[in-house]
Image (cartoon, rainbow, N blue to C red; front, side, top):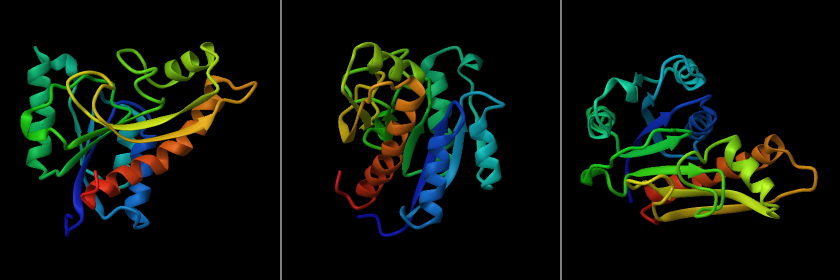
Length: 197
C-alpha cells in the first residue's frame, strides 16, 4: 500500500479521452493520485489541449526525432524519472516502447478489446472495433494490462465485457467499450495503489 497519493504520467497520441477520464478520477477523489506529467507522441493533438486546460505539465517526445527505439524509449522514461513518476499509464499511446528493467510492473495500458484477441501492431481505435464487427463477435470489451516489449502482450490486470449489438457500427461499439474503459482503468490503478495487483 502506497500511503501518499502516487505520481502518474499519462502517455497520449490522440484526443486524450483516457487522459480526461484520469483527470476526472483524480479530481473527484476516485484515485489517490496526482498526474505530474503528460507525454505526447506528437505536437498539436487533443491530448495536449486537455492537459494544458487542466494545468498539467506536457512533454512532446516524437519517435521520428530519435535514431532508435531504445533512444526514444530512454527519452520517455528519463522524463518520467525526472518527474518522480510512480506509475505510467498509456492512454491511446500508439508508439512501441522498449521497457527498461526499472519500469517493469510500473507501466499500464488499456486496450479496447478482450486481449489476446484483436491486439497487436495496427490494432487501435476504430480498427479494433471494425475487426470485432467484421468477425461477427457477440461480445467485446476492454483490457488493462502491464506493458512489456510487444504490442498488447503483457499480463492482464482487468478485463470488462459488453455485448455487440445488432446494427452496431465501429463508432457505437467504441462508445459502449469506452464506458467500460473508464471504470476499468481507474479500478486497475486503484488496485495498484492498494497493492492488490
